[in-house]
Image (cartoon, rainbow, N blue to C red; front, side, top):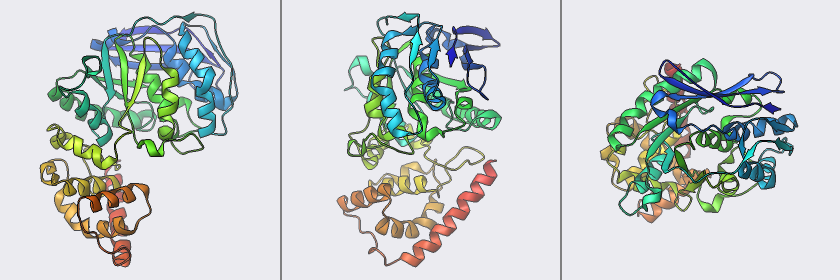
Length: 388
């Protein structure tokens, strides 16, 4: 794989950072990222975003990487001294590769900006809530919210339409929080036909975050799992290993930092409930509804609503959930929580016991739970079809 020299071009109110890429059969010949024109000053002139973002495709192809453009020397060192070994453990089909970068550059002092990815979910809202509080050190206080299209919404035109829908939905929330909102579109997903987003989301998101190091020196990455689940090994997701691998790519100028692994999801939800903005914009749904709202019946919607009920905050979220749907499905979901071995529901069951909430005896409502679960799946499928 050969990565060329990055170019930055402006057109019709948007700014595009792109770099030629050769030696990847079936992939595009350029990797690009684009942002609204008002955020042009955030973009880096370095090739770091391409080197980080295309590492896994290069490892999958077993092809050494040659970089013509300037790349931070600390990035090259981190990728060749530990990071690849973690990725190989997560995805055993990958193979370590060499990186030849003739134009290595020493990193400058970090830019003052502090950003986090914002999807309006529990994980991202928990980061926002803690990093806008009066107790946070000034160096860690949020200055920007970002939203990346690097594969979470699938690639191509359909993914781009969903990205635009979500961008439109999230921007008002960022405005009410008083923070600039930076949507970053890209074609990075087109280089990953062999791996889904979840299994490779760590390097993908870090690639887009490093794009903005011209103005953002610290990037707060919302954790998915508590420390007890952090591990390095074969997995469907890098979420388990990211807290270990991501610090390997920290440079003087760009400092990604994991946040939230000290909390369970229930504890994060409690933190989020204290942030008023979440009452009108929380979005946890896994269903592609037509208007981008929460379906209120998928697994994540039900888990979140029950957690909010346990902490006495469910009534505050009537604008983002259909509480009548929740009430209809609640009894069956309680049966599921009572006996499930799913780690998320086991954690929720333990939290319910801590709050003194009495769940149905395990197994007592097994048949009722099965029927309700089929009903819920049917409703989720209808929601997905409606969302296109």
